[in-house]
Length: 190
Image (tube, rainbow, N blue to C red; front, side):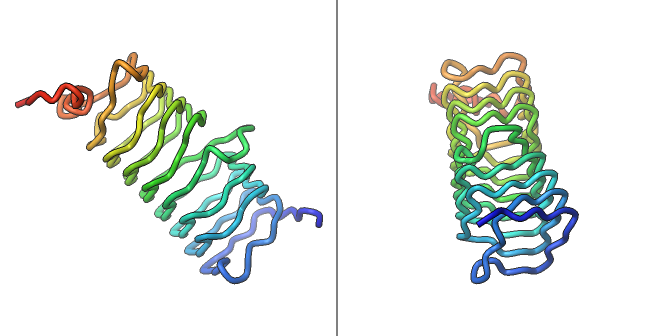
């Protein structure tokens, strides 16, 4: 079956759990308050699309292209972004819940995470160079061999980042965030 091409279309309050979204290329489309949870978006292409107030929890993303895609007020629990197509991969998150998701080995240079819950997210071997984590909860998120050079975590909290196993040169942290860099030493900072 050939893929379809859809441009500049708005999908509003659609439930794609029973009636799946048609496989294809979506460009400059907007998805508002849609339910895509547990759906298979493998091999879909989304370019310059926006998802607003959508539930995309446990969506399958095998070879899915996310090119300049914005997520706002979305629920994205348990997504495996590492399975997405790497070519021109570019995402932006605002007011989203991304708990239990994975960006393992993904390039996320200059990515913005604004007011997001990123609990237990896997950022192992991820390139987060110059990325911004603005007011994000990073409780129990994994940073292992992660590139955080020039990243801004000044307003984020609950993170534990080992400077010995991650690259943090020129990264920005607040004074309150210093504890998240020294967590493994089990010291008390007052």
